Image (cartoon, rainbow, N blue to C red; front, side, top):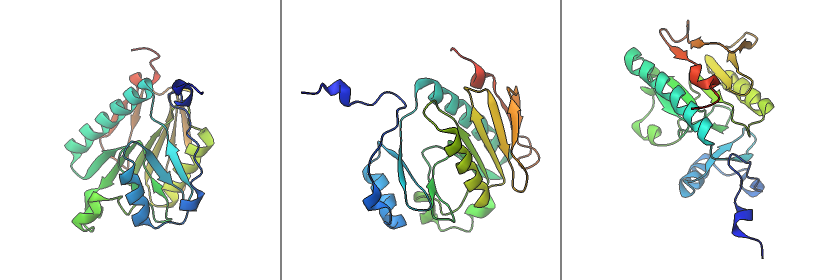
Length: 206
């Protein structure tokens, strides 16, 4: 008999499931699938492929809350938009459903949506997205996600890789800008006043 511990995936390990029978389910059905499995973080590509995202390790979880807190604090001061963490899903115009690690949406865009829309996957692309690379994440996959966000309307994106100590900044119509070990990130000119300190991103210990 196989020991129970052998059936438990390692922290931040990919979980591979054959979900091809669900590739063409409706947006409502996919939302219901996610609600029926609250312990899983699911994303769906524009072609219908469903990915099960593994739980983050401790270090990644710490970095993510530092990022989310800094951006939320700025959003509260700025007042022009709403910030959300990785638990929020977005149904992009191309049909994909994504959950960036941190996202921000202008209030004026939310004002055009019915109240019921905010209780489901938001049917739009965020104005600003952040993806934080975990040890299990494939860099090529994250780069493709960032390109997808821009193609669907995002105005600014940060891809942060703590292992390589790099930040790649994405803006529409320009080549991505790769920064090596920056001490801080500025959201200017798109997000006036947003500055995120990155000391905790590069710190190896706690």
